[in-house]
Image (cartoon, rainbow, N blue to C red):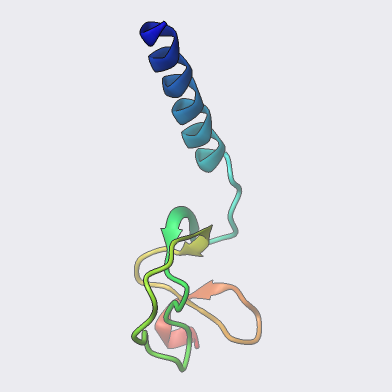
Length: 78
């Protein structure tokens, strides 16, 4: 019985991780299973934020989200 429970839990974890890997994000974005609720954007520095994980696409390192287009751009393109 214990073995069946362990196998079932393993399958659920693997399926959950596979779903996260399959999320399609835009250009210069990656999917994060624990994204900040208060990300840094063009014209808005990162701020103190409650610790809250959100599963969503975030800008790759070195990119910021443009306020009007919502796309991830280099800081000099803000």
